[in-house]
Length: 145
Image 1 (cartoon, rainbow, N blue to C red):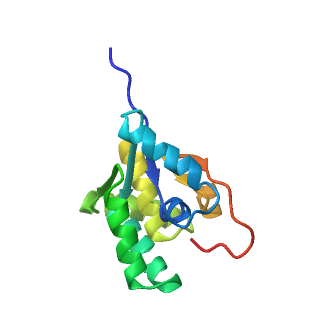
Image 2 (cartoon, rainbow, N blue to C red):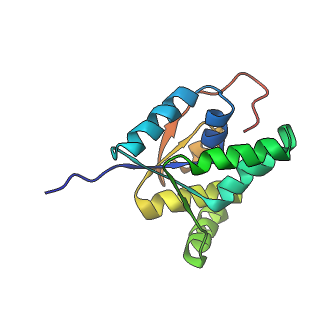
């Protein structure tokens, strides 16, 4: 019998925490190492990658976002496209929870993959009955992932 490798879905909060060296960055770096050795699988959606890009552009600039995206491609994170069934699963989450649609996609992907969500975004507290949430530490006031 083989042991199932756990899967963790990273939201934009987690990805930005890593790339901006915010609280939890070291933990995420360790997850990347574990993923490289096959101890864990990491995933996100293409929409969350887009969110990381636009937030980086707003905070810094386009070249910094391009560099971040190139670096992300070097890490063992499977980026899932959003197909019709994932979009509709996210719509079900969004219909009953006041959560940004990109976050609903993370929840829907975690449900699909039977995975935990890694985030520091307090909005995810309302979906802990739907998916397992692993919490990153939050930066002091003013954090905007």
